[in-house]
Length: 143
Image (tube, rainbow, N blue to C red):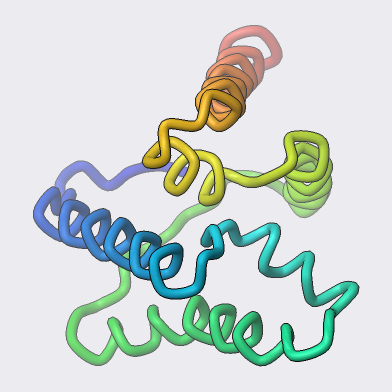
């Protein structure tokens, strides 16, 4: 994946970050739940009574938000420079990591850090270091 620096839009990125922060704050204040995507999705695998509707609504919002955004502005172009096997392996490793780390980047990085959770700080630092090392190995040692 590469960033199109010519069309980089820091104000839109800031606005998006603010909306994510406000949504995560409202979610925890109004529902008492952390807006961690892996936990929300994982809860659908073994649903509890009365616990499915809000999870489906949350996931529908994640899918529907870009569609609404596209009504007002063009969606950014995403270019992924990896084969199907690499994408499948990466997805499985991310899934394994979120299970092993007891949460994902949204749960730990957005919600956990804002609550000053030490566990989330360690998890987020681990995510970042793993990403840095992976990029270094793939771009400088293997390539």
